[in-house]
Amino acid sequence: MNILIRNGTVVTASETRPADVLIQNERITAVEADLAAESADRVINAAGMYVFPGGVDVHTHLDMPLGAIASSDDFESGTRAAAFGGTTSIVDFANQSRGARMRDALDAWRRKADGRASIDYGLHLTITDLAGGGLEEMDSLVREGVTSFKVFMAYPGRLMLDDGDIFRILSQTARNGGLVCVHAENGGVIDALVARALAEGRTAPIYHALTRPPRAEAEAVHRAIALAEMAGAPVYIVHVSSAEALDEVRAARGRGAPVFAETCPHYLLLSIEELERPEFEGAKYVLTPPLRTKEHAARLWDGLTSGCLQVVSTDHCPFRFKDQKELGRNDFTRIPNGGPGIENRLQLIYHYGVNSGRISLNRFVEITATAPARIFGMYPRKGEIAPGSDADLVIWDPDAVHTIRAATHHMRVDYSLYEGFPVRGNARMVISRGEVIVEAGRFLGRPGRGVYIPRNPTGHG
Ligand SMILES: [Zn+2]
Image 1: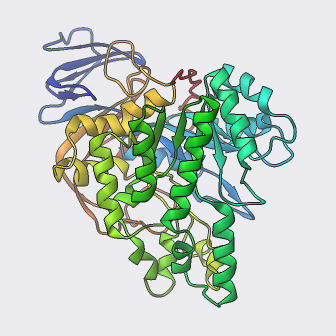
Image 2 (image 1 turned 180 degrees about the vertical axis):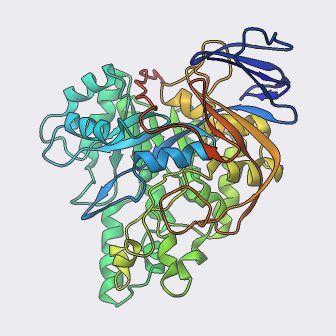
């Protein structure tokens, strides 16, 4: 199937220009003015529209087990929702269980995704246990396209690794070309603050935020960067939420260290007051790291403008309010941490970033598609509009007005973090490897059409 997209304005991380885009089968084969229509089976008129590379969301948790429950979107519902929002690639986290091999996690997540994903997906490997001697296993995973790993500095006894193990993992990636993603919060201090709050009878959702102060994040970001520098490895800080943590990233980048960092729409657009909503509704906003005061959001926008932050991802990890968030009604530590967002990232960053004048159109494409594809070894297959790239494209209507609502979103969760938020600019058509999967609000993809993306070692450093 050959498709010609005519009369649109092609926007990449580096340029904005009127051009037609020719798709032959799964790839882009030409991006030029006035391409001939003869060879096309279908001609799409994109007059008045932008043509963006499909969005790349490198931080999602689909079908993620958490104790006795799981995040409420699986790979079928989650990738369909992503597609509606203009995202055509995700990188999800396969979590190693303690005592199991890393490969078991990879196999388990491939089973969750294969046959269900309707857009392409890669996997990071979350390391929770080196007791089985997993360092060599990392090398074989990198060779097979799992080129990024995640470690936790929080959640002692469950997910947290000590500094020695984190240093060993970073050192291994310095040799094998992998990239370590760090959840940076000081887990020991947080556990002590949580125990104190509970002993004082403070059990409401707001205490989730008050027991995880920005300093606990900044300290861990500082330490993660120091460990990476000692190991001679690059490092990627996930979900930066506070000004103090951002300052640590900026200082490291200022001295030339290969440090990368992302933030998420909720840290840019929401604040800690949400956790004080009555009737336990604050639980909807229990995310980790927690929402901060408003001043932090302004600083994070500055970080995106200045280049200190390279990526906006969602950390999509939805739990239903009705029967999942509810588990923590009498104890904030039992509220499953996380919220939905996979569908709304482009709408929100376009509206509150581009329309408000905070970031340029090209910077929008860079932080939502090109930079994450580059950093995680998918570029130029993903995140680019050029001959040879996968034909993953979004035809974006800059004038489409939309109000975000749980009642109309496609994520399998009973609330939205952005209920009632008005946005202008939305995906009109979404193309994944040359196939139109969303058109005029209808889903035309099918579960299982998404393929696994083996990724390249990234060689930062
Ligand atoms: Zn996450």
